[in-house]
Image (cartoon, rainbow, N blue to C red):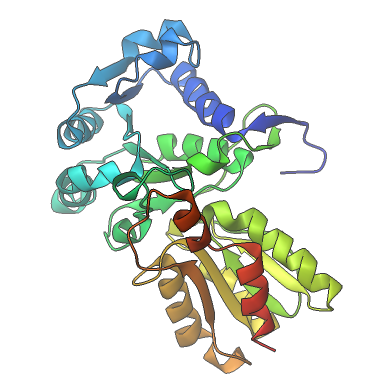
Length: 324
């Protein structure tokens, strides 16, 4: 966002639906499909004039995700609202075996401009069935683009870019950020898919923070700055395709890498980023790569058991201190 570009304070939640409404008004091919989503117009979240392009489907994720894939093949640009990210498991065939592969299977004759919106509910006693962050599963599916916006500006800009993209995009928005405000540019605002951003420059340590842990990472960097450690905080924004040059350039300069990811540890995004750095920037590393993640356990209902599981600023600070 240019310093000269006017902006206004907007919540993450409001930015999501501004993106939807702007794109639906811009392009009549944009439709929405999902469970109980007629409430968006009935409650005034979206313009009532758009109600004929908002389809409330039966509670069958495999069914309405398939509807989205079919609609995309016929020329529409559907946004499929999965409500909760864990419901992706019920639609894996349609997302991974159909949406991700049809362009390849048809030799490029068919494009699948479908967006799957998956809201990650965590840190709110939503229990094991509703608290997963399954983006690592989809990073392993060639043909899908996977984005995890961390700010109001980026969730708006990435949704708009995803709707205009001719390939399937899965957007993992974070429910814990819904009512956090931030500056969103006025007018046309697109965030490019596949481009990371540096949230805070630094010279001593590269800190890659995914999604909702951005503020914890920035808070940790502020604490460490007072101790004389300069931390560069990078937000990948897109996990597939990953902006490797931005991350590797930073690691080449700092020689140290910590990755913070609120998803589970094994085979996660943090593991992939660590492997890339180990393969392509090993000569620059001055210390072992560190990961700060959620442990490999089902998420409990109890707040006193759930809250300590997630990466917080204290754990990030400690991980950076150990690299010295």
